[in-house]
Length: 176
Image: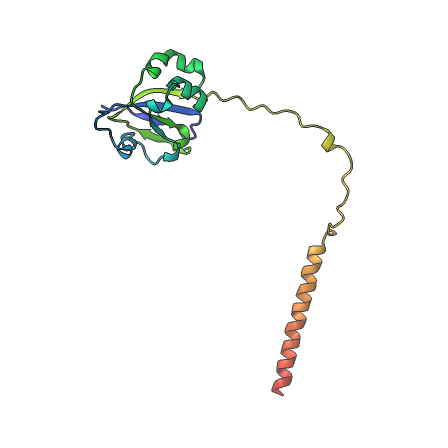
């Protein structure tokens, strides 16, 4: 029986970490690994699949905290497991789902390591400065008077009717 991961609609600020269990002598193709996620349509530009050796001296936990904004306190219980990974990993942020609900059934060669929430500061609204809201509003120099659009439409309609009438009169005069 495979694990089913249910992604709720509108999920945001969540990162899932997968280990890629593969033979280093015969690595899996990237497309095969993405297919092993068992997911519906994904925005693949948001998914990271890389060899941990590419991080050089940086640990995976540091990469997740600095690169994905995951709080160090959230990774702390799994620090040994996260930093003990070798080979390739797949990082799947919720942005890849583009707000759509999905059911994923990841399978070999992927192994789910953990689900982490990005540390997002709450939105704070400050009071707007009052200086801009004080004073008197004056009319702009190039502002049109109210109703000028309606007057233009009436004038255009009258001219159009005069043109049609003149065309009819000329047409009748030519026939005579």
